[in-house]
Length: 133
Length: 133
DNA sequence: GTTACTGCAAAGCTTTTGCATCCCT
DNA sequence: AGGGATGCAAAAGCTTTGCAGTAAC
Image 1 (cartoon, rainbow over the protein chains, first blue to last red):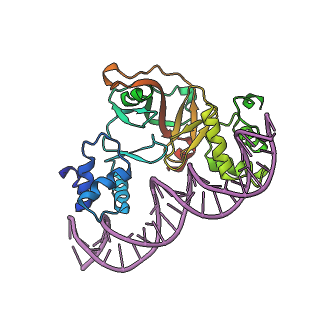
Image 2: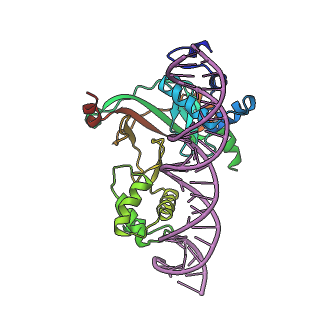
Image 3: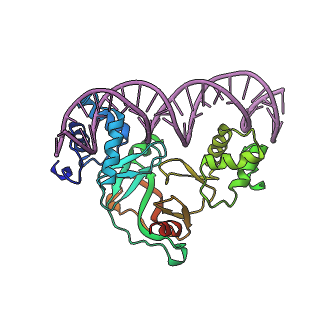
């Protein structure tokens, strides 16, 4: 976890546990998910610490806060450019690594300075397709 | 508001007021926004009615629930295909009416059945650009 | 007359905050 | 040693729910 030893982030055991859980994690976990997992190793872990750590990481650009679930915030340690495919039934999310060349037509920019984009693809995952019968 | 007189939706004065507020509304209001506005005409209006109406409309496909703000849900009476350009500073949202031909590469679909997509463009609006100085 | 909606208040969830204590650097 | 982090509990927002009364159909 040496990659986090920088920019004034204090490395506490709790933070290391959170970082370890997030490292390479593709499940787009919520704070609750993170808390539940890390709590097994650190039973005294509190939600405040989870949120505090996530906010610190977000400020450093180490995690993305995803707003693709209307029930709760989700976090993604993959901060590289990518998009998401979301099951409209169970909310399972998979990454789409492709780069799409899309841009806002000049006449629709309303003088905004466009800095990026994120695509949400919607669909039904194999598990939920099976359940539909 | 005849266009809502269908599919078993009971038309109460409160619902009409909400529908009137939403009709053609491009501000992507939250439940709070809707409540605050409609309350002026119907001081006894309750949040339960606002949420109840929005849920009924959503089920009928008359409004979209947007998950582009991590603080609260926003609603959009424009259910036609369109995308959004969001100010990362003040969260103001404008519609992007263009159609983009993007699709998930077959090898990344993970057996999902893709049904649609929504693009969030991020940027800084003219008002916030001015404030940056 | 039925069935569905309203309003109110309380409850439920997620997220934030205050504060005393603790510990990483 | 000092400043930031932790843990706990309480609070704050947003959203949902239960229920009795009411109104649309």
